[in-house]
Image (cartoon, rainbow, N blue to C red; front, side, top):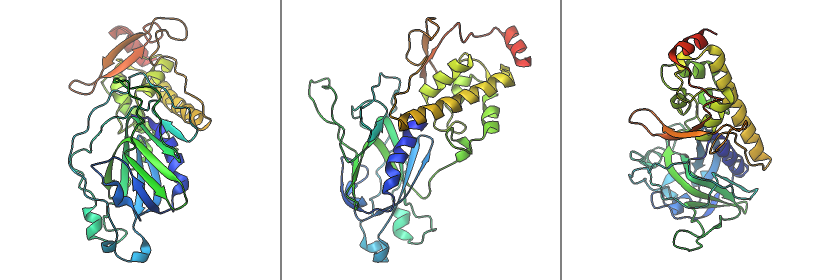
Length: 335
């Protein structure tokens, strides 16, 4: 799925339309009726890690929620796991940002999302109403402004079919937003925790360092969204390479200096990636999906992940990121 920098760009695209009313809708979503957004107002937009939160309120002039078409309760479903390590290609458009492909994927809403039942029963602003739409983007998720995504190549059947947006919101200002390959669910609040967001000014380094220092491979910890929200497989690979740390190094055996360097590279790479997106530049990686490191050493690739958990493809250079024997690890811990 898109990582923190991409979702921050999505937030940047949507934010100018806060304060406008939805006057027309479209889209292919069957789990969330697009027509139910009509006449609602986009009142706020927030971002946290890999998730975008949009607040929708009914027309204040109606005075009652009973006269407005509210989003229907979401049906239960199961989310399909996607592998974001497939080859990706950015779309050349300044009005969109995607995770580098236009091929649509079928995602469904996870179990347990009950829709706006609470909103229908409570009209007060602080009454627990589910007015926040949580948008989680799939592998090729994207938002387009005032245009639709077009097919860049034929599919496996040889058909040139344009991706179908999951949701389209036509706004009172004359613009429209098209959401592709995403899953949506209603929440009573925006689940934002700046201290764990790697792109937030309030990112808590101490909390991140404590998590990294545990007795488990650092490549597992880096993908833990509780401590590194917004960090995905690309950032993981790049930060480990820049810090010269083997992916399977146990955090408990790394020195404070090495852990500090790893966090520094996480933040710096993420910030540079985001800045490049705003400047329309494609992010260049040094190790991710490479056959050689910048120095020319052969790169290794394997899938790593917690026992019983999701395994993620990992690229590393055995020479630039050596896996130290136990005795050398102990010495490194003391350095």
